[in-house]
Structure formats: C-alpha cells, structure tokens
Image (tube, rainbow, N blue to C red; front, side, top):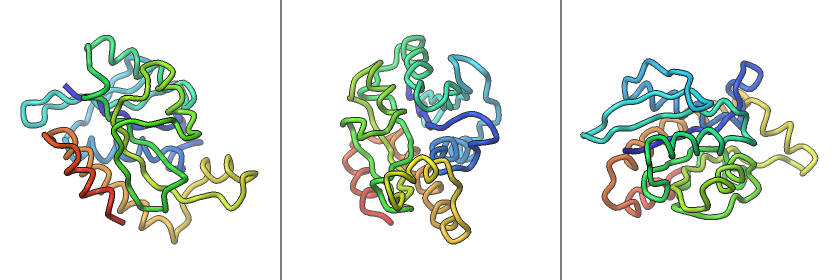
Length: 189
C-alpha cells in the first residue's frame, strides 16, 4: 500500500501557483491512473487506485501547506502505512532549477514549511519527490515568488516537469530498487 501526497494550498487563489506544484502533479497522476473520484476525508481530498496489485492512495491535504502533516498523519495511522517505505511526498523546491526533479529517501525540511509539518509528525524518513521551481531574486520576494504563477516562458518547462514527476511517482510505486528511479530522474532536466 502506498500513499502519494502532493503539497499545496486549497482554493482558487492558489491554483496553478509554484507552491501548488504538488497538487498539479497529483492531478496529472490521477489522470494517468484513471482516478476520477476524490473524496473529502482525513482533512484532505483522497483518491485510490490499484497499480500492479499495489493499492495506491493519492492525497491533496486541504489544511494549507503549514499543516500538511496533520492530514498525512491521519491517513498513515488509519491505513497503517509505513512512511519510510510507502509514503511519497511531492512538493516545490526553490533550490532546484525550474523543471528539474530530485528524489530523496530522507532529509531535513530545508526551509519548506509543508515538509516541516510532516517531519514534526512522522520524522524525516519518507520519500520526497522535489520539483524545481527556480529561485526568487531576493529573500524579500520569496513569498510573492512561490505564491505566484509561472510566466508564459516558464509554463512549458513546468508542464514538462509535471509530466515527468507523474512518471517518476509511477516508477516509485512499483520500484524494487529506488536508487534506479533516483538515477533516472535526478539527472534529467
């Protein structure tokens, strides 16, 4: 059983922003896996599918980014999912160039409030699929940057990254050796 979570903020105001790239990847993944129904449960929107005999849950927490761990923790406890092996969290990363993906099996939050929330509930051992959104020009512009939408020039790279992230997540669902998936997607641009 796998839980794949896309981080973002609920509401039209945040739709298609850099900070909601996790939601966008979950939407693409749901389309790829033919999941058309998401129900409200566990302080989030959750859908399910079976992929090669593996039950898979897709989750978009509706708690706002800074409380994402609340929703995720509820799902993990209810279904008795082992986060170290079966939780995949997809989110935006300003330290990666736009369009670049990076998979890690554990680590610190690195300043990301959604990840801080998850770590406070379950610790640092879970799979992360980071989606590069580029960097703000200055520290003062960070909030405006992450809550902003991609420019027309950036949109093609962002869409391509969303497609690649969906494929990477599908590979992680069935991977016997995560390092092979990491090799494939951590090198791509």
